[in-house]
Length: 328
Image 1 (tube, rainbow, N blue to C red):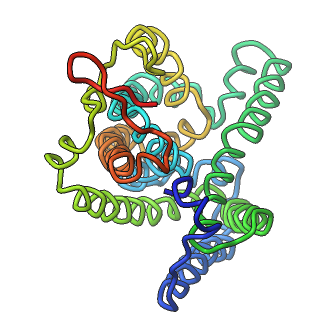
Image 2: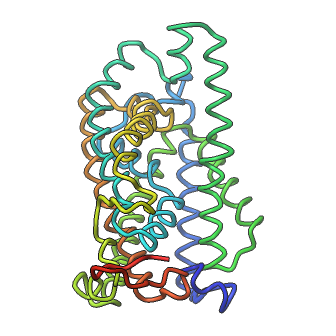
């Protein structure tokens, strides 16, 4: 919707006083969590306590942390945009990744526990030498900072600019400062408990957004009537111009999804912070179920935007032979 309305107005801001109060309260609450854990920093007497939250994390917190670290502003905007362009086919990655949480909980987490590590580069040093540990650490940091975190921050900036009319650089500074403060001051404990709050707010907010979007088009049946291209409702698409080819989905995506969920430090660290393997497994199961929701909560509003604003989004439908349509 940001792209659809940008030509009419640089901002969609319709914020009232209560909205600003809620935003400021949320920021203060996040900072407060970081301050609280920073004041109790003495309880974290070792690097393992700092990086693994003293290995006392409950399964519910583990599951929320998995989900919140896996779903960010880039996922919300990206899946909504992909849903507007290509429909439910964009959801295949999330629905497929749910199974890899099971793989993480039952195969990888027990293995990591046996090796007594709390970062993946540590394992490479145990298995090979310190040079490979340094190489993976540097490569991971560059990749996360230049690709993953940069995309997530910029996606959040789009939201702040659209809703609050904030400029780009002040938004970037605010996001980085607040996140860095509670992360560095409170360690993983502060991170996982803020992610519980973020999970709750994310699910509530996206559920309301999805319901509002579907209501605007007359529900699922109305959405089906409005979209000329019926392939928008196909999970697996075989047309040659789709960015989600069946062969790539089944032969290529599992390697990427498997690395991200089972070998990526962001994900593994949360599993290792669980009280024991049972809590880690339960957290993985919870996260797997939660991962079934984003395709519906994120893709469907994008598809509704396609039906409501086809010209503004540049995705007008052209009839094809056989009653289909072509998303341009």
